[in-house]
Image (cartoon, rainbow, N blue to C red; front, side, top):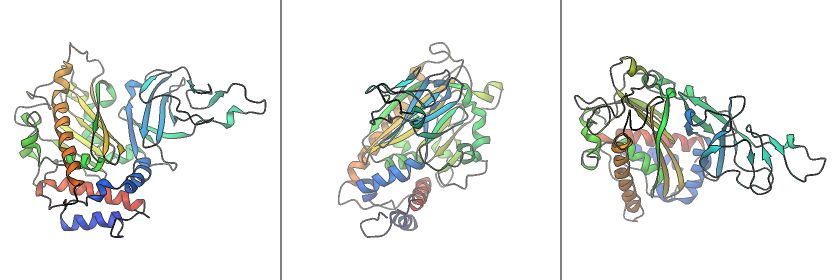
Length: 389
């Protein structure tokens, strides 16, 4: 059992700081030992966003998912099914493919040419003895599920809670966006020199927005957040503290999160194309995934800790699957608000990482606008406690 410097468990330490109304201790952003435990016990047992089904339409199309030292492949088989399996050859451990996406007829290890089918079973291996049975050497599989066209992978051995059940309380709110009938218009991967918890904390509050996000607040109405700084929701909240969903307040006259508040794409999503009154909403699954839906586009954000002080954040912009770049939307306009906001946020997170390294840093009291940060701490404490940390 890992423990903080004072011998008290990390989960108890976080709960103590919640009770005192202050941020969490600096060592939780700096400890290499804790980071290793988080990667195995938290991220290694969480649903990880892999991509959108539009990226996996034909046989042999694949995506990779990276998590710490682990790597998995999600591939569309010739039978139309999605399968997830280890990206590590059963022979001598070489990675089969580099991180990213592509199309393969089969997966051939570049080292010794062991060849795997699209479902991860071994098809053959050169120059092995007659007694060698390929059927005994399939690639280890992982759990894969799809929610509204979004593909998720879970690397844990035990069967996880189905993603549809986990996100179920947000179903009514998010179904209107028709995410399954979208496609990826653009993706940006950001390298943030900060601990993953600082990145998540930043996303939970808008205490910093008025000063730091001029593009976002042109249409996002910070004053429209409720008295605790949370998003308003008229749907049943999740009992799982990892899951949060709610509506984004927009300024009067704005219908989308864009610089001018107008649609960035001429092809509305889902029910909005059939006349549903426009609204913007989001759903978060801590600590790996967030989806923000606007009537004309959506963004998916996924987070991957790389080291104790570096986090890769990937954002993909989704548009209607019939939308055409240059005709129905201008890519620069589509990505402008979120790309600018992201870069502003990452600079703030990196400043915070530099600050918490200082021995002089002692966490201070949280404001009423940071209640959602406390919600994140509660979810984090639960995740730590589940792993006896």
